[in-house]
Length: 252
Image (cartoon, rainbow, N blue to C red):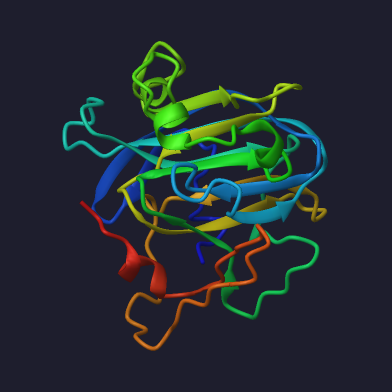
């Protein structure tokens, strides 16, 4: 797992990655409504309503995406999303931890992760999906329905927020239930869900680390395994061992 010193979510400016210096920028994606206090991290086009669930204070929380300029010229011609973050309170992050739900126990060296198969990650209130998404086919009816309001169109629109991200009220919402989406860095893979804390241990934010910045120090461990929670109750968190993440990523 990265350390607090190497973790750069929500920290704009230059960062050294290998032998390259990249520039990070942070973009506001608006508010995410989480009245249940059960925050789901998922690939919204593949497993919306079935992702990893962590406990946070109920309420409306800002979401921000940290984007890395990975171009050789540092001219903004090649951008990759590095972190998607739900901000719970202001403060200085001094430690990094795993994010878990109240009913989850992780072994040493494990953390929750999001499996991505559509190049996208998102945050949503886990309790809102059943009530605020329609009963019919989501792909043709919601995700790619040929309108400017389809989820694909909004993610591609630089006028909505920024190209590659979106904040979308779900179709059957009655109280503003929404989902916040972003492209997943280098693409499909398995990405850890982490928390930052201040010096008093107060939870500051929940992050999906898209593994654009920093390296997996245990990359050469070949005997680690991915364990998947198959209880099918919507808390389908995937505990992931150190060293496995980089091997699972289909970097492009």
